[in-house]
Image (tube, rainbow, N blue to C red):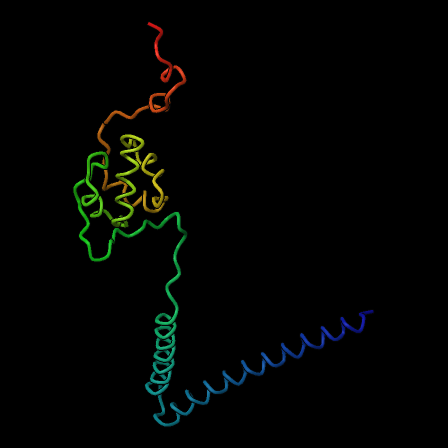
Length: 179
């Protein structure tokens, strides 16, 4: 035996189903009326075809309005490659050697502005030449997306990159020899 709240839920669902069915029937009758009136006026399939054409035009119009309002949904991010736009600046097509390029030359790359170009130059000066795109990602402001954009546009010359032990001073370095 259903409880009182279960009965109320069943009554509510039945009412929703009846209202939905009534709306559907009203739509069907309206369409039949419009297409039936077209048949009576012209007595043939030509006017019924015109009613169907009007219905199709209304659907297409509604789709256009929806498309203008809502941005297009993107497919999965893994499949999409970022665009190679950089605002008003021109994008260079020759690979830029990140290890010898000036800040101005780096600014020609997409998504690299004056501040990021300066950070790249400072990082290179402090830590040595970049060996790969992964090394370039250590610069603040270069993430996965920017790195994937830059990948076909940059190259890395084989410069000397000091290992950590070379860049650090040991205690022995500061001790003067006894001679």
